[in-house]
Each structure stands twice: as structure tokens, then as C-alpha cells.
Amino acid sequence: MTDQLPNLDTSLTTGTLVDADVHKPRILLLYGSTRKRSFSRLLVEEAARLLEHFGAETRIFNPSGLPLPDDAPVDHPKVQELL
Image 1 (cartoon, rainbow, N blue to C red):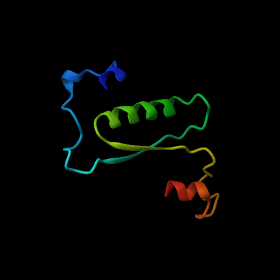
Image 2: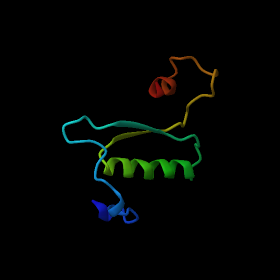
Image 3: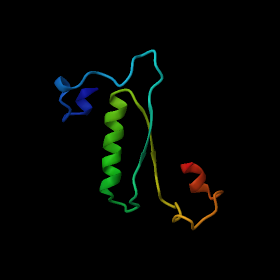
Image 4: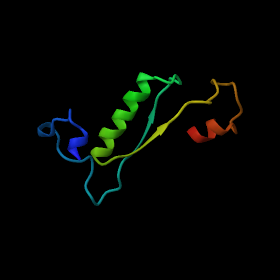
């Protein structure tokens, strides 16, 4: 699996985030840009790859269609997805 992470120095890592008997940590990753070539989205995707390598369960929230604060009701579909 480390061949998919060529820049990871395995001599500096301790293995995984948790023991096998413990539930994987769940991490929600957020980014704010909705541009097609978003560097913050690319950074979040790379962070997710690293976190998954170390045993975390990740989910990335795509903000496309999310209304501005105080601009939509609480039952808006994207607001509900984020909640």
C-alpha cells in the first residue's frame, strides 16, 4: 500500500491510528471552494488518502449547492447532508 503513497516516509510513522479491536476513527473533511480546479479540494483528497492509509474512515463533504449562511431553511437538502 505504501507504493501508492510514494512521498510517505515510513520510518517516521508508527503504523495505524488505532488498534484492530477499536472502531476506526471517523473523520469528516471539509473544503470551501466550489471551483473545478480547487486546490483546497485536492488537499482534502490527499489528506483523506493519508488518513485512510493509517486506518481512519473518512468522508469528504462537497459544498456545491450549499446555500450561504442564513440564506436557506434548515430542511434544505445540502444543509441536511452537512448536518
